[in-house]
Amino acid sequence: MRGTGLGQEIDMGGTLKIGVLVSGSGSNLQAIIDRIEDGTLGAEIACVISNNGTAFALERAKKHGIPSLHLDHRLFSGRSAYDAALLEALREYGVELVVLAGFMRIITPVLIDAFPHAIMNIHPALLPAFPGLHAQQQALDYGVKVTGCTVHFVDVGTDTGPVIIQAAVPVLDSDTEETLSKRIQVEEHRIFPEAVRLFAAGRLTVEGRRVVVASPSTTVSQGFVNPPLPA
Ligand code: GRF
Image (cartoon, rainbow, N blue to C red; front, side):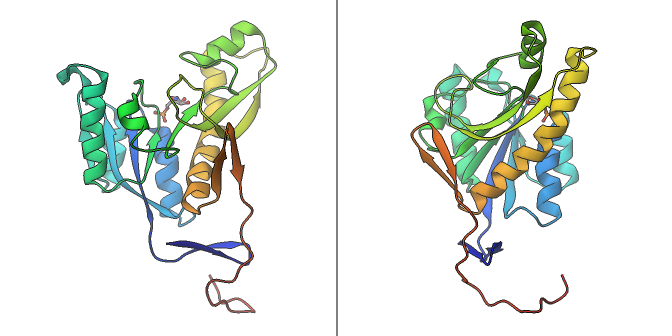
């Protein structure tokens, strides 16, 4: 159970179990791990699953003692069969929130219906602009002056689900896909853990296309000390 008090979120004991799906480097996974380890995120990573056995993200998970799993999509007859296997693994680890952190696969209703409004994805553009692959290059090709990144809940479309949080990044005349991607990633690493934190604190509600972010409650649900004890 999670609670809030006097503008400060208070973990009342239960910790949100998240499952992180990855395919590559895992820098977003690392950002979430760092926020969990510094105690600012009321969640624990129950498992990291990669469809790619050589993903560096798996090394990161191991280094932090997080259960990790390589589930090779090529061993399954199709997307639904693969997602059924993912679902089984996520259930085994008691996952409540699924985080797609550079997971380079389209997921199907097998997974989406099993986790209603509980699957998040990070996309390197200000959605609804530039969905799909190579979003940074799309932004450069279009000539926009501002792009960024978006964390959204996943629905059946490609990058179409309700937006949770966004960060804007200026596009510089000198930018290449690589330099722009790097600056966008700095923001990804700030907003993805924040989206998870808001979810873990029970502050996200989906109303149609809109994600409403509740203010921290002022209800006192736990004793507090004033003047405060040292942290
Ligand atoms: C990020 O740029 C993210 O926006 C996209 O895939 C990339 C994953 O990077 N969905 P990493 O594996 O988290 O480093």
